[in-house]
Length: 376
Image (cartoon, rainbow, N blue to C red):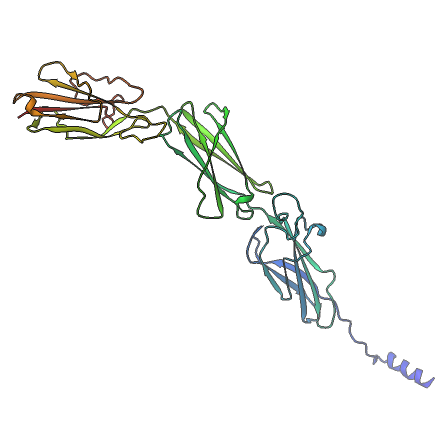
């Protein structure tokens, strides 16, 4: 009884000692930047924010899971993206989950979110509850598409124009991008394109496909390329192809130089008059052997001897004519003329006494040249 009374007196006197209770730490997860997170991003950094009432040392345990929908952990991989015991964790965001679903052409479902879990325990054994969790939305990058065209014959009606699409996808690779083509005439009537074989880019991150358009009317044709990635992210590119009528051919060069005005070229020895180059979309000279679309320039040579009428040189159908002054008395004035025609055979409208002529009234694109000369 005396012992009980003694203990009671100590309690009443305030001398009884009780150890303080060790409180649990609390944790939060902070993303180091506010930037949106995309599939395939590198070096994403997360940091633990800890509040321990006693300022005890806390040990961390991170787990990062790749998910289809991180709000439902059953859609997350069992295998972790990364783990850590540091206050910070740095990791790369995967483009695909590691657990295949066995469906479709992809090795596994694309990652659409991350589930980050953080546990902590202080050095006295108090465990943070509840564990800290963070759901990070993972965005899908859209495909990249570049469209170009090659008007092989100047974009003339009824001739082929090849169109190319180079495409890629940073997080899905080009192999997993679906490409769809549409083509519309200037009247917005949809038409079909033909597949063509094309070389592949040197950069393995990209692929190239090609189509052939054979337009039947002039105007702006629209080529639409639609690229879709496995998550349905779509990019549409409308590319305009201009189509024109067959333009007049033009004398590209000639020799010798033709004097102008009243000046005459002295002709003292045999001379070869020639047109080495004629430019044209379809009927150029020289032409390309074996090309099923290209034709060849038609040359018409004529000669005027003094005051006599101009005569067409029969059999002179090539790009050159030789004139020998020995065939004419000295002092004879000659006019040698060449006129060129393409498959449309547009009549040259200028009067006979006009040295040069352009069917489109463009002095930089002539279809007639005349050499005035005097035999010596």
